[in-house]
Image (tube, rainbow, N blue to C red; front, side, top):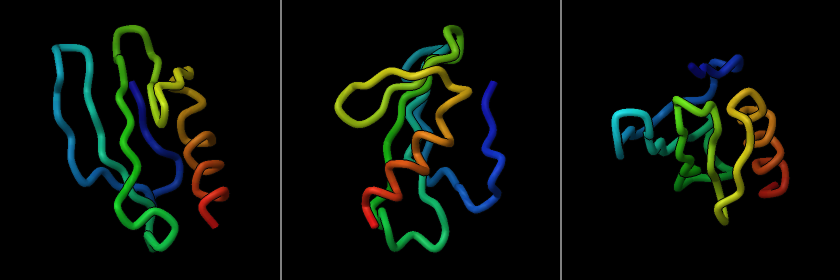
Length: 74
């Protein structure tokens, strides 16, 4: 369904909200840009992800979107 291309991403926690919906707390090594992690919710059946203020994107664009978020954090 979804996998990061960059092996520096890790999931600190995964919580299944329903049979097709999972909440992930993610971090990217070394972790200085988002030390508390980034929370996303993935709807596996629809292949969409929700992050931040409730923005929805295709799961295929999730990694690049998260990279952009980290860039904004500095």
